[in-house]
Amino acid sequence: MEFIRKFLIDGFVKGDYTFGFVHIGSIVLLIASIIVSIILLRGKDSKYVHNKMKYIASFTLVVYFVRRGVMIYEGTSVLKALWPFYLCNINTILLSFYILFGWKKGKDFFIITGMFGAALMFIVPDGVFTDKYLNLRILDSLLSHFTIIYIPVVLLSTRAYELNIKNAYQVLIGYALILFNVEIIQRWMIGENVDYLFIRGTLPFTIDGVPQVFIMIFCAVVAMYLVYFVNYLALGKMNQFIEDIKIKAS
Image: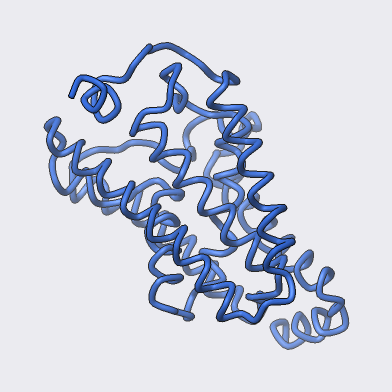
């Protein structure tokens, strides 16, 4: 019982263990899992690959909601515990639902947006590795970020899913909704004003005199088009990319 309580609530050996065994091990596991999965799933049909992704999505959601249950047990309000504000949390929940239920409308948004924030977490974690050993809090964060990198990269690399730049407007709408969720709904719903999107903070960088919100929006849009470009390039469909760009511009 003591071990379970430490794993779920108290933790084992608290401290800053960034770039410790759990941190480095998680990066190695992520990279190895992606490489092995691409090798094993390459050439399989889209439905088969998506079905395999359902196992990851299901396990991720179970851990995610168990963690939220513990937060509620510790005194966090149900609304605050369950309503996602971090972009990575939103991606974790909705990308998993997209995979489990086969939703398609707006899928480009969740395939594209999760990867960058999740990758940044592994490189520059902010208060994630606060214990020497793996506990529920760290597992939840790692699995959440693992999922929103792993599933998009595997789907795109095995060609089980192909991005379509004609859907870029859906991604832009998604950006706007995420901003509204954090800046408006958060204040109205739970009366807080946490900088979940780092639009007033120092990540990933700042430019003197330029509001951070403009920097983050610019980076997000550039990142979106970069992913579209790389995906078309990898598929050998640059002519199609140019045609689709022309159609969007006309």
